[in-house]
Image (cartoon, rainbow, N blue to C red):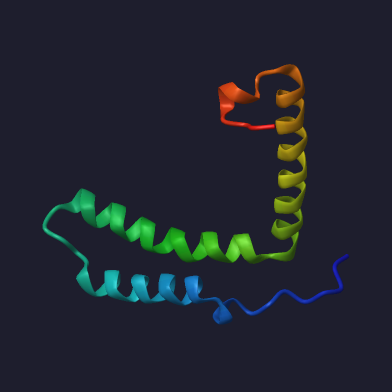
Length: 90
């Protein structure tokens, strides 16, 4: 398994801002329009969870794998002559 401990989420500015946003939203709810209340409530919960998910060590490894795979696809597109169609130079 992984031996390197994941960094504390509370050290990340984005996570702190997401939690602050959630605290503000909770004070605002409910709004006059129920659909806006629901959407704002769900978003204020989703953002800190997404930040936490992105910072887990397994996710960081997946991100590196994604970048490696994407780089391979861009190289293939360039070699096939399709790079210009997708904004790929080279």
